Amino acid sequence: MKNINVVFMGTPDFAVPILKGLIENYNVVAVVSQPDKKVGRHQEIVNTPIKKVALENNIVCIQPENIKDEYEEVLAFNPDIIITCAYGQIIPKNILDYPRFGCINVHASLLPKLRGGAPIHKAIIDGYFKTGITIMYMDVKMDSGDIISQAETEILDSDNLESLHDRLSLIGRDLLLSTLPSIFEEKNMRIRQDENAVTYAWNIKRDEERIDFNKTRREIFNLIRGLSPVPGACFLFDNKEFKVYSSIISENVFSNKSIGEITGLYKDGIGVKCGDGEIIFTLIKPYGKNKMTASSYINGIQNRNDIIGKVLK
Image (cartoon, rainbow, N blue to C red; front, side, top):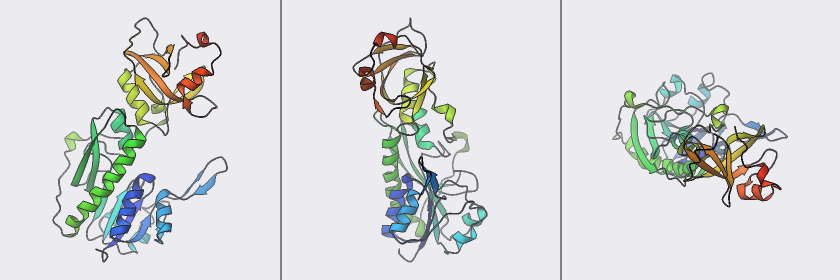
């Protein structure tokens, strides 16, 4: 339906396959993205992933600092539908009420579970066995609009933030493209969310990245996966911050060890005592060094007896 004007609003990599799918099938007249940011040591300005796609396809990209104050620029494109995915700002009512087919959001959870900005992180961290994508009508309250369609995926122990992120992005693209015809034909479902079943996935705070070794092996295992590869779970070793990106749940218990104590240096990695046993760190980033396997780090230790028994915090 190339006669339907689509405005797409999104910012990060997660939204890229979704925008590309729309460009291939619909008339995307404009893209709205968050302002470009300075990154790296030299603070170079880098285009957002969504802006890059827009420029590659000769589509206008606008980047308002505050969409609430600059909404008229969006409406000037006369959109028949506005589709958002991980845009990063609250959409004002002036925009929500404008398109004849409404404002549609692609959200990376099975709403009403995990409303908010970090649903993929929290699905893993909080021990969910499944998650998915929800296509929904937008409302003034965050992620609270009527559900149009959903698709599920299982969360595997082999998943981390990156793998689940990439899989959900493709599921989101496919679900959106299969759902849009019913919206344009006005035959789609509208299912109210059950407010009694709502959970939230707020953006990850810095202190949430720190491993609490009082927690169980499974909880720490999930935290590490849910923050890998970015920003990475962390701990202090000799008052220096280390990052950890993967781990193994050990069968060892070590009831005679202290919480956070290094229990052993193994072929697979570094064992640490936690609330209900031992977890083994397999991929780490020592302070001031590059990411490496824990076994490589161990091989560089001259006296291993100086490490075993130390307590991580």
